[in-house]
Length: 495
Image (tube, rainbow, N blue to C red):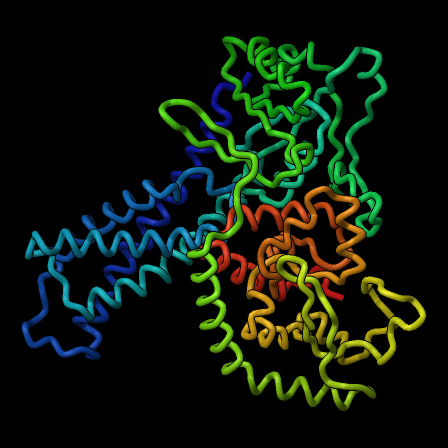
């Protein structure tokens, strides 16, 4: 059995990222030195400082920044996170590292930098580190695609979380998970009847969405036996990590499985069934050495709401100012394309169940729902106009909602609002659906940037919305806005 799979994967990832960061920081420092003292753009009244002094200083700076990145978790499991997480982490690390370097320079005068040098290095380091992280992730993915550094994973159990693990392995190749197979919990006769996992679902069916235990995944995962055979399976297939996806009524099997794997180097992890608890995340905290698992927490505090509202006002005001020429052009295009008003108003349910009129550029012909009633838009919907199809492809029809944000009806980021008829239907089908209304609705949201927009699973969307409600931070809002740009360019499920 492999004894170094997870360790090898972690070491490879950390090495690539640390080397890339060190090289990029050194390149940013040396480029800043040349730009300030040799480019001729800046005057150098005190003469050009010795290069050897700045080379020594660069090593100190690189060491300080790498320590900051390590302390903030930039080298721990980054392959399982999105590029937006890395960019936000780098930005925060550069700020902390810069402050620490300034503090060190205060005590060691030979390391003192001019304000122009330090300002340029701050900007160049962000740019170089971003490029370096993108390249590092690409190199890591190429290595993993060649079959090197992967963690061989065995899944145990058939809870809804098994499919979420498979989805993560598919969507995040840097996670380095290679699912080898799965084990069922049951008798030998039940095992013989278990097929390979070939998960498919009609994401548009509300009934199926109400029981989100299957996701559309291009994975054929063979059943390798039952839990009683786990030790033999782990040895035969050289498993590096066992992941338990068991319902809570089978929690006792966690300790039983750990006993079966005694004296092996295989990692063992347990993924809680969040669907069964009607929650989005479990948080572990420690009080006096006692572990507490938080299943549900309050929404935004008063201070959080002030910060979020201030962020909305500042960003929306700037957005309306910059985008005003584009808004004018789009309004003219909508007016000339078909009969009817430029803006379409529709009653949507916002925070605490209050209704408001959400604005959009009209993308359908007038009276589009007179015969069908309230229905969702589907791909190649005949009700959509030619200009409307273009607006929907690039999500430009949503831009008037900036006015809703400025008025306070909505926020830039939050769960997408639905019509009253859908809210009532989904609230009956999903126990915690209405809890997404504890915050203002958003122009974009955590579910949408994770691919859950358009005619997709409502239950999955709800879980992502609840995660946002329970884990809000300003950094998360910024991350979602960055991811929104990426997803708009992709145009997935935009119709």
